[in-house]
Length: 240
Image (cartoon, rainbow, N blue to C red; front, side, top):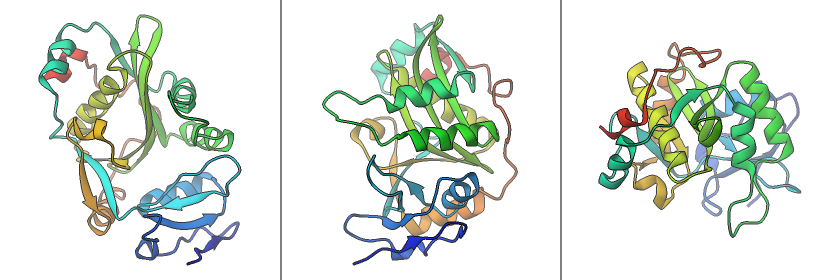
């Protein structure tokens, strides 16, 4: 079955119900990564994911992996480690560095889906105040981070990395703690993984996810830099 090809300048997407079953969630191809198109995609429960040499591919899986920010699970062993951790947690102080670290190929992987065009697109969104990073620092060393897109009271996680054990977990837990304090109930983690489920992720049917997004994305949010607006969290705060 063929999928629609998006035309330049036309920001409309096909209804997400038309996404393919195999591969699950593939909805459309083509178009561009301009800020207006990306923001429109996220508001409709759609995200880009493709590799070098492919056209831009747009996805809306039948099941969406999400976190309820008030119901994060902190395993007992991780909680003990957090109580003794002296890292610092910041936001929007090293966005490009976080994206570059996320783009580095993982062990046993070849290449990355964070292409040069994707890097440029999300740094542009960051400059406009729509994309953000949360970072874990051990002194002057960036040891973990997560980045994504915020629209209204919704955050769409794109990728995270660990430069030291538990680095990505600290960043993710800190982001969810801040979101809960702001009254943002849902974080989109896109695609399932065992690692995410250990921290409390669950799967949400596409229709329910898109309905939640339609409500949350139009509510007042926090556009602009989070550097001075992020709560002053310590790793020990995340153990509770």
